Amino acid sequence: MEMETTLSEEDEEEEYDEEEEYEEEDEYDEEEVFITPQSNIVSMYSSRTEKDLREICSEILELKYAILSQRDNTRSCYQAFKRFSQEAKVVNEVVVELKNNYSAHKSIVQDLSSGVTSELDALEGLYGKEIADLQNSELEHLLNLDNDSPQVVFLQNLDMLLGERKTEEALSMLLDSVEIIESNSLEISKRKDMLVGQLVATSNQPCIKYSDLKKALEGLIKLGREASAQELFLKVFASRLQRKIDSFLPSCMIFPNTYTATLSKLFFSTIMEAANEFDLLFGEIEPHASLLVEWAESEMEQFAHLVRENAPSLETTSALCSACICIQASLNYCIILESKGLKLSDLVLFLLSQHVEEVIDKNFRRARKMVLDLSSQYETLDQSWLVGLHFSADALTNISLRNNVKKFMSLIKDILDQLTPMVVLHFRPIIMRKTHQLFDKYVEIMAKAIPTFCEDGTFIYPKEQTYFKTETEILQLALLNSISAITDEFLLGHVLRCLGTAEAK
Image: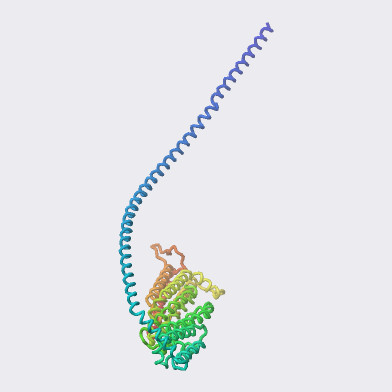
C-alpha cells in the first residue's frame, strides 16, 4: 500500500510539472505572436508612408507654384514679344524711310558734285591758261635778266640770308624792296613761306629768350601772320607757366595752409604778364583780345583743378584756411586784371564755389562731432588741476559747465577765424546757416542737463547720456546764462564783427 501511494504521488507530481511546462510554452507562444516582425514592419512602413506623402504633397505644391510662375513668365515673355514685334515693324518703316531719304540725298549730292566739277572745269579752262602764261612770263623775265640786274641780285641775296637763317635781315629786305616784290610775286611768296617757317621754328624753341621771341613774333606780324603769332605767343606763356607749376607742386603738402596763395600768384602773375605783352605786340583789338581771354579761362580751369587735387583733408582747419586764402587772393588778382579787359572773377567763383562750400560743410560737420563728444574732453581737461582741491558737487558741475562753454566757443572761433573777407562776402548764407545749425545742436545737448520736475519732488533726466546734471536752481540758471552769453556776447559779436570787417574791406 505504501508503494502504491508513493507511485501515485510521483505520477501526480510529473503530471503537474508537465502541465506547468505546457502553460509556459503557451505563454511563450502568445508573446511571440504579440511581437512578431511583421507588425514592426507594418508600423514602420506606415509611418514612412505618411512622411513620404507629406513630402510628395510639398513637392506637388512647389511644382504647382513653379508652374504658375512659369505661366506668368510665359505670358510676360509673350507680351514682350508682341511689343517687340510692333516696335520692329515701326523700326522697319523708319529704316525704309531713311533708305528713301538716303537715295534722294545721294542723287542730290551727285548732281551737285557733277555741277561743281563742270564749273571748276570751266573756270580752269578760262583762267588756267592765264595763270600758266603769267608763271611762264615771270620765269622768262627772270631768265632774260642779266646776272647783275637788281631783281636777280635781290633774289640771290634773299636766298642766301634764308639759307643762313638770318631772319631779321631777310625780313628787312622783303619789307624794303616793294617794287621788286610786286614784279616777282610768285617767287617772293615762296620765300615768304620759307621765312615764316623759320620764324615759327624759332618761336617754338623751349628755352628761347623773350627778346628773341618778341623779334620772331614781330616778324610774323609784319608778314601778315598775326593769328600764328598770337597762338605761338600764348603757347610760350603756357609752357612757362607749366614749368613753374611742375617745380612748385611737390611743396604743396609741406605748406597745406598757404599753397593756394602761391599757386594763385603763379597763375595770375603769368596771366598779367601775358596780358601786358599781348597789348604791346598786338594792341587792344577785340578779336585779338578774345584769344587772350580764352587762354586765360582755360588756365583758370587748370588752376581750380590743381587747387582741388592738392587740397588737404576737407574736414581739417588747413583745408578751410587754404580755400579761404585761395578765394581772397584769386579775387584780388581778378580785380587787377579787370583793367586789362580780363573779367575772370565770375569764372573763378563758379569753378571754386563747390570746393569752398564742401570745405565749409565738412568743417562744421567736424565741429558737430566734437560737440557730441565733449564729455570725454572735459574729464581730461579738469583732472590735471583738480587734484588736491576739494569742491562741492555744484562747484564741480559749474566748472564743467564753464569748460563746456569755452570748448564750444573755441570750436566756433576756430572756424570763423579762418574766413577771409571775400569768403564771407560771397558765402555768407551758408556760413550763417551752418553756424545756426551748430548752435542749435549745442543748445539741444545742453538742455538735456535740465531735468523735469515730478509732483513728488523728484527729478527725471532724459534717457540719453548727459554730460552733467543741474539738480539745483543755481546750476540751471548758470546753464541758461551761459547759453545766452554765447548767443549775445560771443556769437553775435564775433559774427557781426567778421561780417562788418568783410563789408568794410
